[in-house]
Image (tube, rainbow over all chains, first blue to last red; front, side, top):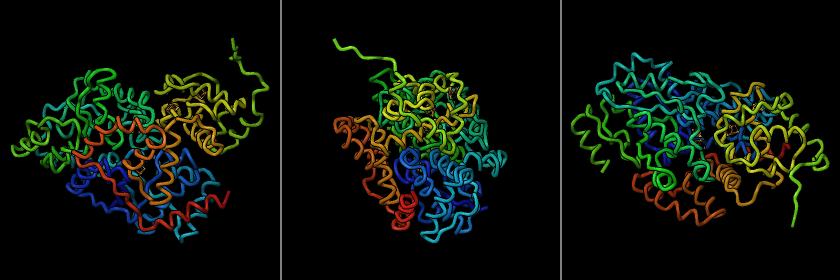
Length: 299
Length: 191
Ligand code: SF4
Ligand code: SF4
Ligand code: SF4
Ligand code: SF4
């Protein structure tokens, strides 16, 4: 099956390592992704705070474009995009006034929104469509000895738990285990990282990131794996400020897709690992050239 | 010595506000709130709020319009949905917070000097004009409007973004800008 890939602004901007790692990994697993033509920003949490009707109109333009192109599934890797697109469908479905607002906007530019195209997160596609066996088969460089804290963040399981448990999701845990990594017990896996509050109200926002980093270290993790560009940004970017305010919690954070690529024998450079501010240590199992490159990227 | 009354009188309320909010689709369940405080307990930000989520629910229901729309609480809500999934009465607390944010922006009564509502409005402008958001340009705009000094504190992070190749000042634009703008305008026309 072909999936329509909705990158969202972040994966083309500061979160580009997510795209750089996810696309080759999905291709390697036989998943065909086609970028949604002329997609627009989903509006994130910000648009909903200003005007719900407009937020739904902006988000649904993407779904209408996918529908027009005859695409059956949309893949949204950013947690906020994933939630906003899903939420928009729920609102159109449940509330007639939203439906008529969206219909009116669509009619003004000859678009149509008629079906609820499934909007899915890569974790969902990996566990449900690709399957654990197919993932295991591709592992050539198991992540032996790497202790990973799986961090899901809030918005992929809340409020609509579709493919995983709302309180204790395990899809990423299972994938990481299939890669040969050791998954540490991480009770804060769905606790909020602070979202954009790390920038707008750092007094409050940074503390939430700090709590997650501290817990991952306490649990003995070498690295935190995320599924969202904003989560990664928050956990990776404020080590200096956090150390100045509380204590040093320098632990690297990476995208789960970067770890998948490494286990499939792709290099650290190909996976965009040099884009992290806190570098991940080279893996013992990595090919010699790759270990050298990771070390170079880290220095 | 100036004395201020810390208890609200009935006369301070804006009659009808609660009914109005509870008539919005998605906010109806607010009438079922049992004031159990679960939302405040699970909210990761309640310790910074001027009123906890439980208090905001009660104050909304009982017409304390000026207090809730002028509160910092609604702008501290990170939309993490922890409260919504835990509420024993299935109240969509996060969505009620969104409803209150929209009203505070429409009536321009959000607390001045708070960057969150400024960021939200700049964000919508960028989407309307270009169809895409550049996080760096957006953050710069927000800091310039609220706290230029804070922008300087962000300089090391900016350097880090440049070093790791994640920094871009180019504003991406979609081809269908005019269409998107047209679509958004139909929403105002329909109001
Ligand atoms: S979530 Fe953020 S980055 Fe992703 S499309 Fe929406 S606004 Fe843009
Ligand atoms: S975990 Fe952080 S970035 Fe991810 S959805 Fe929650 S607040 Fe947003
Ligand atoms: S959790 Fe629900 S019922 Fe309990 S106080 Fe909060 S809104 Fe009311
Ligand atoms: S959605 Fe908002 S109010 Fe509810 S728990 Fe999260 S931050 Fe608190």
